[in-house]
Length: 462
Image 1 (tube, rainbow, N blue to C red):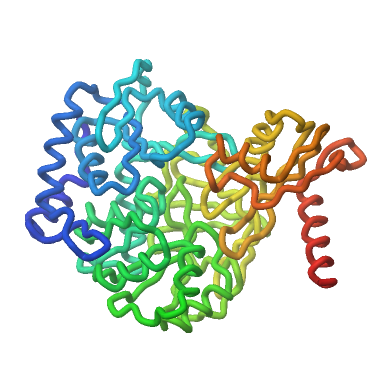
Image 2: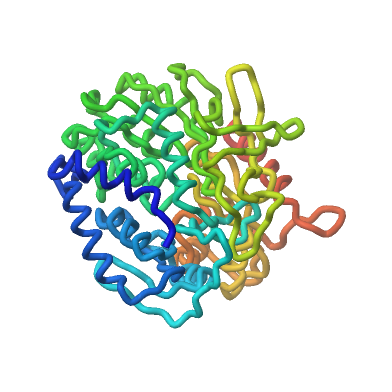
């Protein structure tokens, strides 16, 4: 069994912190001490005793405070852990289990053994599989080792000034790369405690930020806008650092939040393939939408041509699974699918190379939604595209051609039955037929431009 990088670090944390709070609830009460996590780690290790080195377990704990102990115990057993959201639709969950050839589905109350053939991993064996669509929209996993997670954690903590004495506020998903890197890894690496949040209503978040003692808040533009819109909220005494990722932060949200709470929101740019890439270190709240700042400490960003970048550093993961794409990710270099505009102040993200839609940090290819819409009786065809959103990076619009009367509500209900809530289009337009270009193809970018132009014209006449 390979030496575990986190072991010596975690051992030192437990030795120093012991009975001190490690994970808090939203009201500030202690859910786990560091010693509690260590004891829970031993319990999980016993529960996982029937698995063999290299087996993959898909974890659906979500933001359960048991997740750090489960991760540690999985690595004790030399297992590959794949954290995912607990509420994935059945079809997507089955796809993940098949892709990872998982030996178990681990939830909060049970471990479900699966009869998949274990993967014969070639060196280096991953310690974690991060589920992502990469730059193509095709579901796949990123092969990550502890060394990548540790390098990313160090880069984030050093760049953002996150210290062992800080308290991270955990409103984002621990299963997502952003949540794991900013919440779980600092706990294991240097003993930075975090608040485990379950109620994401804006008023509840505001009150728990007041009472939990949180000093660092990694969030999303949508969360910050919701807090900025609260009528009678005006003070967050303990909070000193706000970080936004998952979608470009709009100047309007930045200004509104700063005026209300007298706190700057710092934009953070990262990906599942390498963790953190860039960070806005400035105190300027008047920055353009999509501003990502400059590379994190420990991260090298190389310009490719006019508007692309490559990321290099010890945080870059080994590659994709099951189908490698070494032109994009090869263990030493990652080429994101973002179009980047450069200035003296830093990077600004202005779009995506592909048609993949980015909804608040979660990616979906339009074909997934289109295929589902076509299953509804009366639907002839559908085309889905994204339009800019100040809150979620992009919103989804669907043009649907129907041969029989179909209502907008019926289309929405049909999507909500099988798709994740964030994959459901915000707007449906029902047509007799879909327009095509001279080659007989639908051009999503042109449809998006036409849609935005018509919206602007309609708003001008109102």
